[in-house]
Image (tube, rainbow, N blue to C red; front, top):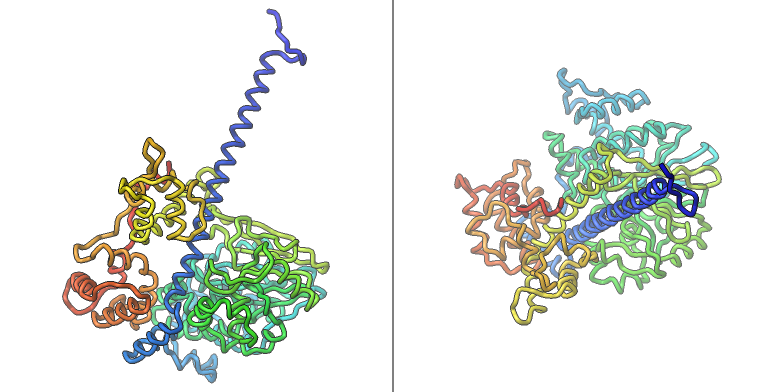
Length: 629
């Protein structure tokens, strides 16, 4: 048989094999590029909704005049002390309580098989805690309160800004947000070793909220702090805050795990959080703080202020006041400790020069390379390490290498959504990044599909919660009342209402239907959604309002519910609802909510299961297949 060759001296079979290989490579690259595109827009959705959610929390007190009126009205009914202060537990806050008194007041039964701590703690105690938490055991409330009391005592002796030197150890490890992800902390310790005199750590805030093991993370970090107070260091984050904890899960976690002593624990934790140091400086060259800086950041001022005096007020009053008066805030002449702490806990870097209000988060500022350079020149700094922002790879370098963002919570939005990372600094202060990911999955395609589905689900809920506004916006473009508008008009309407800065044209196939003429059937973005367990008493406008503000209402209801039974009286509910709607300027007739609440009081005992009530106003997805196609 004659062998056919090409001009290159290759057989036709070999040539065709090469072509096939090239085509396969092109197909593979195209497929991976599409997966990466889907992953990126899914993460953009998550982050945009996260920041919008932070703004929603701040709406509660967004106007100083309304806040004062609300405060005055609510105080007449005795609600303010419940809504804006932590649970009262004066016997715990009392500085005079010692370890022995906790032993007298709280009994540990023989049936308890978890760690039994004795103070001062040792490395063996820390190992016992790690072993217990790996096996999903709880530390008894007596030991928790003792640990927190001792932690407060140690933190009170620490300065606002901690100074460290690499001369005492080969390297210092810096970790970012953990957000209740215990597996990430355990993996860091597995890869990098436990804290010790030879293995020093700085944890840069946001230890709690979102994840399910915030309490265990705090216990582990506080234990190592007591054992190695010169070698493990903690900075405060914006989530080490009572009001933030109410919305993002930590309060609920503590109340479920410690049913008898949760109020005492939270009250003491609130004090502990207020004593956490604000920043760390390594070798006088590397500044480590949680959020960022502003054009008025003064490290000398930060080091001198009374940090424990600034608690959750940064979220309730100061942040929102700064929103309303942002032009004044960034031209201010008078320095206040509240605003300084607000800036370092909430700010984010941007590539553009200048310092502008952080409108995405609703607090802090965006600071540019010029702001960084100015601070570095003033204090002779070399590097700023901050956290506070989700990063897909666990870290990001900006401002010409001067600013590093480190984020240590892997799988933050969804399983497979991101890596976590930590930094190791050697005596030359050269950063080395270590990435990791706690994951049950291995196939990238499955991961991206899971992330995308979850992101689109969250986005659809956001869309449904703004149905009335979106419908009005669409109608402005639909002058002939056809129910159809162009893709560009649809995208502009979506952004004008939701303000999420998302690629709406790219997302269009996942959210809305198109007719053969290339126009968008704009009402189709609501077709796949409905309200959970609707009742005939819920008017459409009322249902949408409840859907949109259910998280804010849940915060207030959880505080009013003193015994954590999940029940509040009809009078308390109506009172809270009227204050809430009055403050936010929501026009809903009192009769509507009264009828709705009465209809839900099934046993007519005058109390409402508000968890069940709020669950009735969450968005149900009728067609989940669309997100996975």
